[in-house]
Image 1 (tube, one colour):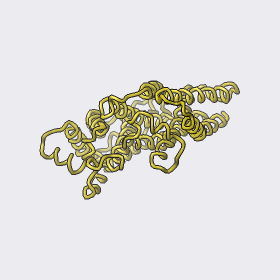
Image 2 (image 1 turned 45 degrees about the vertical axis):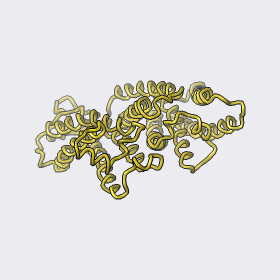
Image 3 (image 1 turned 90 degrees about the vertical axis):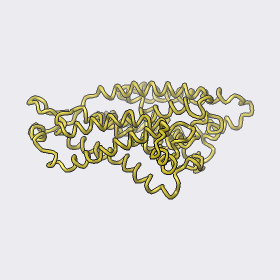
Image 4 (image 1 turned 120 degrees about the horizontal axis):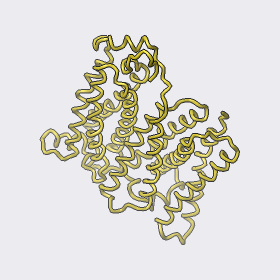
Length: 376
């Protein structure tokens, strides 16, 4: 298949730059614009319509686009990822005049420290994943692994952001964009289910599958290190959940005051993050311990991809927002305790990525040694 379709999507995503600038210029120069809700709804509706028309004219009518519907979903997502990157850059005053009107009049959630970090994650990491998956679709390659990583990242991002918007400080200021975002999430959830239904093309030699279960834990030193890590990680996960629930224990109160005061931020994003991590990562760590001890847990291969994507997104936003100037000074991590905060939280984010890499590159231990099964 020609690579012109994938190249077209990349060019289309970059078209968001002049579109944002043009629309911002028109709105800012139009003195008759008095209803920000109408302008905001018009902005996103206009972008969606434009993308639909361009994709239809450029790809469908010329017959060069892949038949996979995920291609079009990721094409639209890539467009909005660049928009989010523009939002992040303008919030940091690196650029100006692209989304000034939107940042001034939109729902206040996007201007929080969490919304700021989320814009950067979506504009950089998600954008890269969209381009990789679009390229894979264009070339006929399998993209299930990247897709599962994106599933975890996107689901975690959506849960924290939507719940934080609803119950946090600005819960009474939800506007039309919130409901437009729900539509965006609904389409993405459909894409998540599509990714899970894709077949895996990973092949493993049958001999390796049969020999892997015979190796004891002491013959797998890396897995032993993971097990040693998982126990304190699970404890830390539950502990932070208790901190988010305002546990009256002295240790919890001390931690919240001196190491992660951002938990008390009225935006509610940090509390949602810690609670979701406790309810999601806690059981995951138990299942991972089991899968590292008992061979043949095939579900581990998909689960570790989803979890590593989720924990990477959540920790990036949490660490960044805890130190960000948009967070009130009283809720930022004290300077003296920043090294401990960074060490613990970065370690908590990085080790799952290493575990994911181990499971993806050497999956034999997690596969069942049936004579007729050679692939995961």
